[in-house]
Image 1 (cartoon, rainbow, N blue to C red):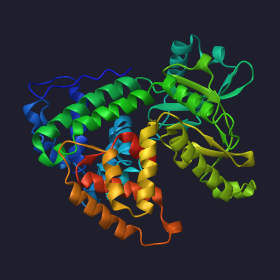
Image 2 (cartoon, rainbow, N blue to C red):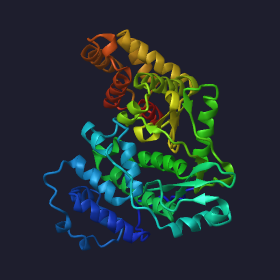
Image 3 (spheres, helix red, strand yellow):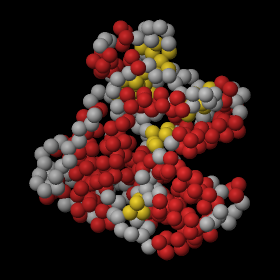
Image 4 (cartoon, one colour):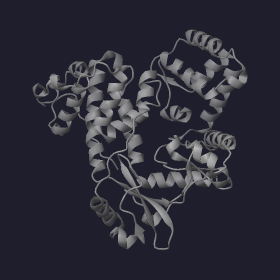
Length: 413
């Protein structure tokens, strides 16, 4: 479990000064010194801001603000990369140009020394890799900010993929989240336009998401749950989990060799049916959301492989979402109302799917929904992308200060 302390606004903190200074230096470097000054941070923490020269920042005038935010996240490391990736799915919180830029964030980083990985395996599983596994390749198949994936073989000969967390990653994330929560608190106090977004709640939501992602036993359970939901469906495959060699910091699953869904040339060479793959992929997504109410929350091309006979294989279940039956029914109702251009009904359902701090102007909301439908629905039904349309409609809801749960946005992205 992550341990995150909330730093009070009143008083000063001397915790994690080196990391705090590093974060603020990066903010200045990428041209966000104005934000730091607005936070009046020197009132709350003795960090020696005078030591952080504004002249250190690179010449970045030609880059957009969105590009600079993305670069700052990459430089600040795992926690900020994950935060940017999640923000890229939230059009209610950030503008379109930021979403496009943040969606480019990649968390591929140099791998940790194998000696450190070996120590984690010995600590978690009770012995070095050579005692636990019949074979363990020392070079990782993939290296990300939170963990690294290795090819290995169990003692019974089963080929497996072993994901091992980076040394000290939990402590790094805890420190970053504590500082992030403090900065969010300052934003609510000093920047009026930011307080509307409730940055403290956003950081708290993010902390809960990371807490699940950093515990590999939760990911193992997610895999088994989705596999169980599709037990009799031969169009989808979820790798098997090996619980004897899985802990909070290590996840061992069946090694599946497939073709990335984005590798069109290899799909063609293998004689696979791209049209059928597309249909099956859409069907799997809809079944997860509408039928099961529990779904893979990060289905980008790198997490989808195609096996022989056009079988879809999903991997990386660290991020999942869930919606209750009533919400699923409301969403179907909303989609039907939009397609039928029933703005009154669409407005009513939209209000059922959202919550608010101040009572909205229902008449104005209905008018804007009607205008929205008029702009977007005058086209053949086959050309209407209902998922994108509903996402845009939820953006409209946010303009009326209506809030939507994170799982609903995850469902639409």
